[in-house]
Image (cartoon, rainbow, N blue to C red; front, side):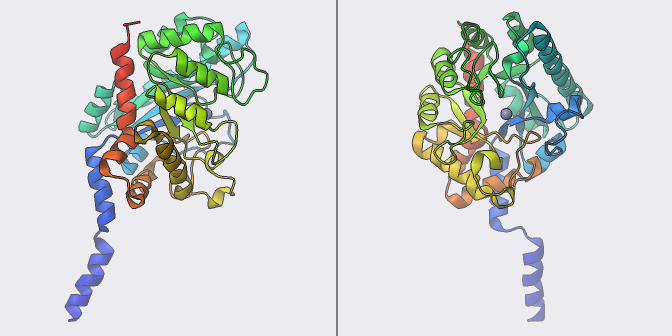
Length: 352
Ligand SMILES: [Zn+2]
């Protein structure tokens, strides 16, 4: 009898519960992708924006959290739209992209850069993390259309139109100036060039008008790489139902950020996975599982109770299972949807 109790106690201590095992098995069969982080900033310029919490992103943490791929953004804060301002923005973006390339080379035993959906799958099959490259703020393009191809050649497969201020491409949602009334004429050119090359248009940070105009202008599905739902937390950075429906109707994605700022008005210490799930559920109910995903914003302000860094991403999978989502739906939400629009962007490239 004593032995029986001992076995019971030991099994509770050492055997993972069955839900954790399901999470592990599910991650064997799906591809998980996080569509936004600001790791590059720390990597290239450690002294920039010291107030933002860092250390939430690495190939090691991706492995720990069963995160297969992530878009690593080259970010520039918005400055003046002058020749000097544009030169500086390009220097920042170029430096961050080169730093990311260096990181991927240095840690090639753990991961590598992915340029296509197939690369992501190949790296997963090798047990390596996939680094996808993006730009946060088309400020670095200045007014030079040839730079879109320059960034494509550096590996960039998604470009966010703005950050927190209007630039030469589009208006930002947090800037009330309305310089262009949405997209500029150059902005339309930029989107056409992105479509031609196979770069995904990212409308997180873009103004309401710029977002809706970009949906109309882009010939391939677009993405809001790190946003939330305005109806649940009414801040400019979150998407209105109108924007969510418009993005989804054209096949695009609403990627929910893992940050208190987007999710809830409660203090940071009280915001956790249930709030993230609430935003996911809202988008699913409005437009369906094919149009939602995760864009953490780690190293750029992201992080909630229970998912403090990439190493804890599996907790989201567990919560989605508990919420009643099927394996197939979780597969779509975690990365299937992103792979789908990456593939469309690549296949359509060159045909416009
Ligand atoms: Zn951002």
